[in-house]
Amino acid sequence: MSINRIFFAKASIFVLTTLSLPIAVFSQTLEENPQHYWLSIKQVGDEMPATLEADIKRVTEQGTHFRDTSPLYSNQPRVYDLEQIDVAKNLPYGTHERHILDVHTHKSRSTDTLMPVIIYFHGGGFVRGNKDGNRNVADYFASLGLIGVNATYRLAPEAKWPDGANDVGAAVAWVKENIADFGGDPNQIFVVAKSAAAAHAATYVFRPDLLDAGTVMATGVIMVSGTYDADTTRAGQNRIDYFGEDLSRWPEISTIGNVSNVETPVMFTVSEFDLNSSLVGTAALINEYAEKSGQLPRFVQLMRHNHYSPNPSIGTQDTQLSASILQFVSSVIGGQELMTAR
Image 1: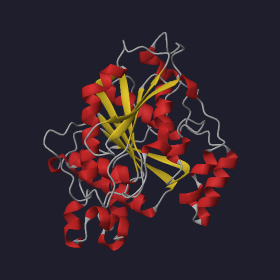
Image 2: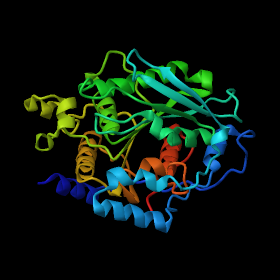
Image 3: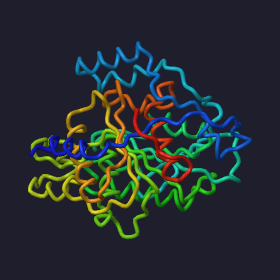
Image 4: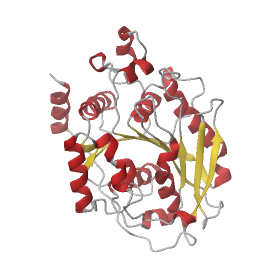
């Protein structure tokens, strides 16, 4: 039976639990009640402007979505004031020059109340990308009074599997050790990882036995449009650079088929117009997780998005991804009950 048929057969037995979106409950300001303020923000989740929706569909159909998606957000208004965000830049969490991260906090909050931490890792196909083009994610969560962390990691071909997963673990370890100095709670650390970084995060969370001794596990992990297999039929140069030239080893490298840890809370997201490898791989990994844990993980489909649009959407009026992340964080730390999908 094919991966897709297995997954959807499972889905017919289990109700695939996605996340409905939190509603405004509190009216306090950030200064009055930092613990509740981040839950009080309007988070409706389905407010992509019609013109943006049409543009995303157009560049996706044209096949130019890799190049042309992010610029579509350049004129989208931000829902936060950039001048209210403090950033401690380029803090080293390891010895490599790419072992650096930025910590984003809101000017109006004190460090007296320790808050949940969101660490974001960018995508880039294992061989490119950096944190500097993705600060909007950490800015947005910091604007709510949370602690936003924007991290980068080693790239192939210098980095080889599972270096990316070890870098995720090293960043989490640094945050756990140091984030209280910025008002962050070292016991409430959440990883958000996109695309290739989601692959690293999957190795980190599902195969911790492969990682450096003493790896620190995050409180929860959110994987956005990841690719989770080492499929020899898709042995592009970027994947060879990271997984290695010996294709006979790829089956043991693949996260799919080798899940060993299902204890850490996880959430998957895919986009409506995502890459086929993300859709099929996510279905297969969810299926394996369900078989080994006896339950389904959290899952969200981001409607009207393509592979590249979720990241730049954070901090705009399209809150599908950001609201889903916030509710997942809230559910894991016990502040709010999960509800069924729309």
